[in-house]
Length: 330
Image 1 (tube, rainbow, N blue to C red):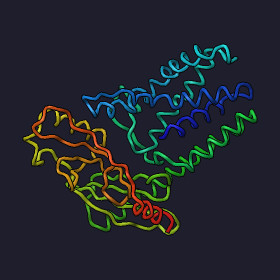
Image 2: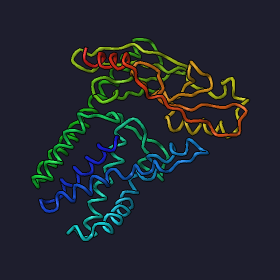
Image 3: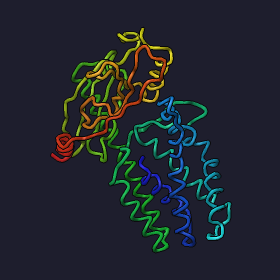
């Protein structure tokens, strides 16, 4: 999730496990420790644009790395502020590990994919029960942990923890409803779906994106899971198949390997950009949930010895913005 959410959850749990004493310091430790796993974004290469995709949400986000990550953060924090805090190093390490440990779990609740069980498996886990950014989830937690620090009240921190658990549980409930709707839709169309994926659209738990996979195509729809339960028809697109790709023989082994790396990152949800045959898109994300879109992807350069190029298009125009809100609130 976004850094503010990660820090807020780290502080929330750390404060919830503390007493009134040192609540502000513990909240600060939990907040910054909760954000620190995302320092893996610094692992990147100008020569290999996909390197950051392999390492973001990898070892720093795994369960086994929690005490190590907490120790690293505690060592830095304690060396800088040991004269200003009354906590022992072991206490700093404990609260840092608590804050750090929330990060990978919260990221797994999104659809991006987190290597939670690295190094035992490279599988990317995604529970798809909350958007990567959701103000309704984050802002109440930020307010409550701030008040907890000011009023020296662990109770308020625990209220924020209850809110977080409630909201994530609500996301799970909505996820199940979206799956049920998707299966009904597939049955109505007479399709044989091999895989079904649903995810909340940006910043809410009402409007959901549905992607299901048949033998050779992806179908994308959206559903509003509010009181009216409204379906929005979407697009379909051919599944990318390297064996059938017309530029296959012009690609080097390096670029073919890059395609496999991007396919792994995108959990198999890749297709050729209809407007550019040299581009392969991650269709999990789009500005409007019933469109193919592709907020990011890779661009191939046939007959080149270089890596593929990572491309990103996250611009949203006013028409899309208005349509998105109409899909939620109409």
